[in-house]
Length: 95
Image (cartoon, rainbow, N blue to C red; front, side):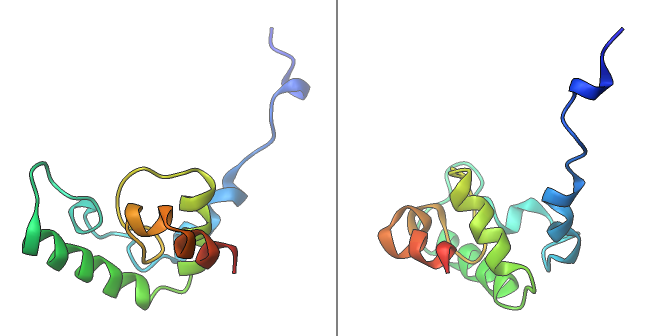
């Protein structure tokens, strides 16, 4: 039998911020590019995703999460993966 006292505690508090996210209920296709997406199609999708993030009450927490786990895909907290990898992107998450 497992010793429950040795198991990690509940972790819901680490994700509770997502309940207030503006993207909740939207499809992932807004935030993550389909295979082969390039050029203006990608620019337009990323702009649409960032517009959702701009009105999100947990935008800073989302960005902090994406930077802390080095999220390799998608728009998180209003920044693309390339923006998060740039020095300005990580500074924005630390604020």
